[in-house]
Length: 438
Image 1 (cartoon, rainbow, N blue to C red):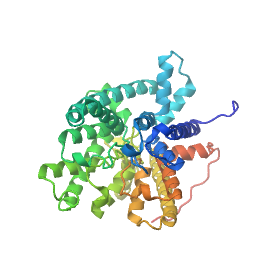
Image 2: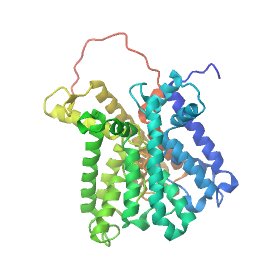
Image 3: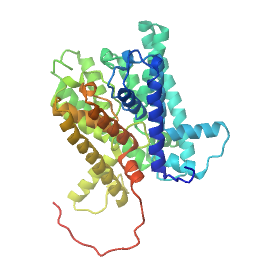
Image 4: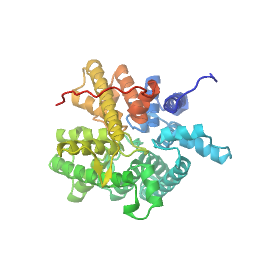
């Protein structure tokens, strides 16, 4: 085994699989659950936690003990911040030198273009997470302690703060946060956490270093503007689509409708919490949420999906073609054509995995209507965790398919493709050829 050499993508895949397996073993310990849990359900929960998805086949709060929930919290934290980030932190704590190989692994794990600065990024990553989660725990405890008692209120605050910042969507309540649909404190704190965790640590690090907007990197500007625009559009559409729906916004007051629309607009960007019954939402809202889940959050974040910048690069490329131009220009910066190829590869491979999974599920899950299955697969790929209520009804094969899609969604289509493919540089150039398209 000592002679086996793994590339960074292969190493990342193997380490993730090892942690998922360890999580499965811990969840199968008798005192980790209140009821017998099958190996497949334990594997599903471990994968969902490690990939910070949030889909569940058994109810977290009733099926698992405090020990089991703590295992889930640990998997969420490790999966969200990154295994290699924790490894680097341990190296720094014991004073061990961080070599080039370790830096390459971190570069791959955090989706960075260069090795330089990855250690500083890891340090800031932990600072952001500790500060954000600690502040959230304080406010959530103040809100929940009078209602549940200090001990239970503190525990609920810690669990949901970790789950929210890492965009996991796990909750110790079977209805997620539906009981707090009109609570401004819960809505603001939870959304602050998963928006902060999902915007990307590269963006947060850039905001730390640069105080003026004009000095920010193109990536940071694109993420900030893009996130604001897509969230506002999603909010307006969901507010309009669900306004008179008696099963969602209909019975709520005007203020509660605004809060609920806002929460449901931002949570599909891989957060996974919900304050409305997703299965009761209008088909138009579901279709919008499908797009939001596939797009996801930011690169080098706790979020999944193809990533917002990938989606925006493809959109700008389309606009560039329609205007008859050849160079993609975003905010007065020309985009490298290789970035477009990468964006197209990510989106295409992602869609290939999604539709392959849907093809298999259409055969194995004949008892379930198609829209909930489509929603389930998109949620798994985007590591979102929202569901229309069919996760627990899946067959054994169906659960395995969702496990694989969650795994692919977390690591990213390209990481998995690079781990399987042998890359080689092209040494021969061929003459150009024309192909009719469109």
